[in-house]
Image (tube, rainbow, N blue to C red; front, side):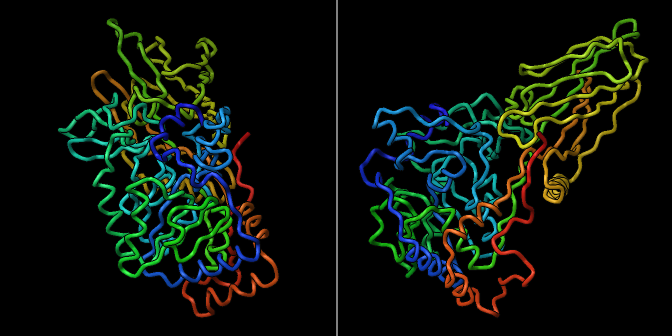
Length: 479
């Protein structure tokens, strides 16, 4: 991640010495502990998960106290690690997606996160079942009506400051604020209240990838103890709360969770990312009504002035019109201005070249233009279209699928606005899951699974189903 990202997260953990050294349970001990955790989760009636930076390290986001953590490197005077991909393109880890499956199955009741990377929301955890204690780098909120806006770009401010955008709720229009806390900011009651409530109700609070050193957040899991609940900690470093825990596992979070999901006979589905953009055509008829002065813009669905981070450039060509000059737009805003005859229809081809971190390199979209014909307006069921796109992306083992989800006309100035949804990443976890299981497995690990799942368990899959597998292997984008 960039230095700016490190600075944005610097408030999350203090610079104590606890947690600098990594510990790894011996293989046979790790297998036994994974078995034990799977049994505990299977019996759980109110499972709460509490996550820290360690859950996102496999996503390319550094932690703080590990050997290559942000503060470890800063303390040693070393340069911060170079980002393998832009922060806004980070995809959820295998653990993130496993939590989604546990939530869908009714096992996981609530997630509490100290991270600001937005990956729990992006993975599919419902907002009402998530507390983001320190905020979300991709979230803006309206201080008046409470409306939240989950962006595809990193919000430019921290410290609950006003941003450059306004609330789009009718009759509101209040200037939005970022949600990432600064040093002096107290944890928001909107996040803390449900977090405390669920920890008190929990029979298990599973802490994943956190050093449990930052107050008051680190004390939340312990609230389960008062009601007879248990705390489980999975972390590579020791924590101050280890003595309070019923089970402490020193191992990679992804490996542990892969083993648990396998023991529960539950699959980890692929992650499919869908991004939105708009094609806006603004037109003005000349005084003699023979020509049209028009402007084409490829813009963010979050507002024309918002960043469009996943598109690097736009190439525009015209079909069967050699007299119309092609253009390359390589700077934002992606905008083309032209003057053409009013009575001549034409068709443009827009080649969208995607930025680093996207699973496909480009996409071509045909845009027919006829200024004499009025545009049909519609607003499709977005959730239905998104699910169809996800299903198709997994089935076809690639990304790039797209669909129009909305088209509207603005009268002044005359503008046609078409919103597109496109699959920009598909990540499968079957290979990573298999590698994790292979490192855990020996002869008796598989045999013990029967004692975890039970032959009569309603959560057990049919014999033909894969265990801890994605529904599709080798999913990759266009290159």
